[in-house]
Image (tube, rainbow over all chains, first blue to last red; front, side):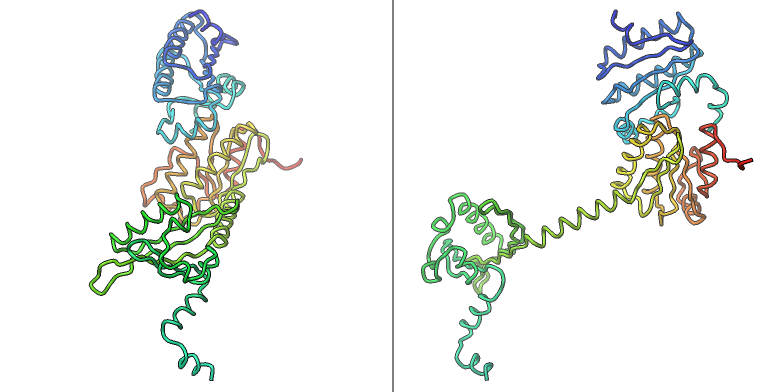
Length: 125
Length: 268
């Protein structure tokens, strides 16, 4: 559990979560739990989940991701998925996993931009 | 004069033998005990034997063991089934690969039982190589036909020309997604002015591309939707209401600029 801290940073009223390369189911569930605790502790404006290191995505990971987003939404914060690789995006769409209810951004910088001016960006269709 | 001579001096057998020797393919016949009965000149030259020497020999006396066994299996199968078989074989002779188009057929007696097997081998290496090159070039043309261009910081455009099948969609998708990541663009304009027809499959491919781009965190604006295409899409029941679509590239570009907080205005 200890090394999980290195994956989560609280910065600028935002929780930045780095998903490690090749995450197994255990790490992901632990990370989710740890994320929830941090959420309660810091009460951030938004959560940025960086998956730029993830090369392979499976159904469990996909479900966990959308579940996490839902939980964060219920807790009154926002989720932005950042840095999905092109190859991962192609496979995901082909598998029918479209993350339609979660916001995405190219990189962390843009995710911060979105969090800064939420009303304008979310109103766009 | 010449015609008369051929007619008068040659038997039908001699005439047929001459014709078979002139064919630019290798022709052979074997009896049902796998003994050679006939080979035309081209084949005889290949195995360096005369017809009289060849007669009665088995495959094992002519070819390496492996090859002879394979031929034996093929021949027995064809005699048993009584059907003509046609296939391409790849040979590797002295480091040179050659592709041989093979036709093998059973030779039947009057009552329909197979009494032997015959075949025609034609070297099609050149034709196949040519085919390969044409396919390769067609692929290259297709790849080059989909440029992805950055217009301004944050906006890229991909004009699509020609029909969108699934292979092409895959190519475009890969190229578009990689360009988005490389150029850090938040908006991708997909111009389909050059797409002649849109059917349900094409529309599905298009939607797949747009969804993949959204997963990356960028936005797609589809432009160049002609009235006919808009009509067919509605008739087909393709729902594009969740996506940004415009009839002209100009309007699409305006919207795209809005996304990156820019606008085009007069100089003064």
